[in-house]
Image (cartoon, rainbow, N blue to C red; front, top):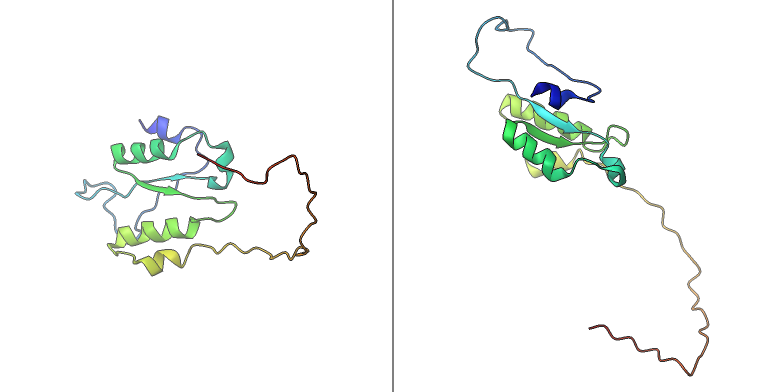
Length: 130
């Protein structure tokens, strides 16, 4: 199963606590495993549907995150959510929204003068949709 999950993966992070040494002993607690889908800024090239990503996470007990490392969309939020879950902290709405980037756009003032309309008496200017 793991070979299917990591096929084509560029990086896997394994994080552990250096102040504790239960690595060779059996432990009751299982590590948090998160599946992070990258490149959400390339939605037009998507081949893995969001539903399939979520279903895989649910079937395997993984946390689900979708990010864009290039555009830095949700990357900080992903790490914030993982750290909060490990520590048993519930993030509120303000904490999760603060890490989401604001999209800025320039306002363009086009010429606001109305364009002269050509009058064509043989055509109606009424449009009906039904």
